[in-house]
Image 1 (cartoon, rainbow, N blue to C red):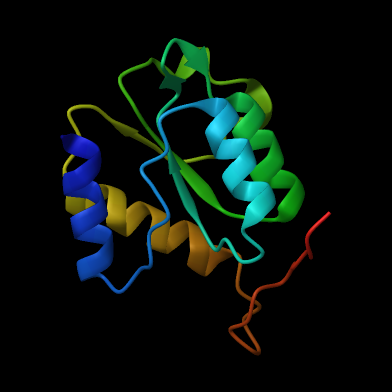
Image 2: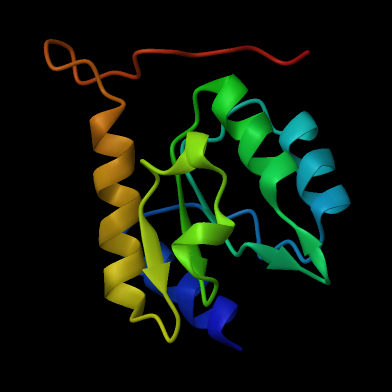
Length: 121
């Protein structure tokens, strides 16, 4: 239910949302199928599986993301310590703002376009 509230909040903020996606396998397939992904909100646990392979795939494509999770920061691998964690119970506007800020940080200050883009595999 929370994921649908988040979808609604992000759509109200102007985003086109391709989720929620309930599993790591489905998320990786969606990333492979989508040429343009500009940001993501990741729950650390998807159906009992840790989401870090999805975070790795996003990072390789230069896609900013945030974690929305009840897990403590110690669960997050150290190479993702810079990623914003929105702790559950999350406020939808907090998550929407966090992903917006993460996406803004990836923009080139001169052009306000993405610094890194990557085509499909």
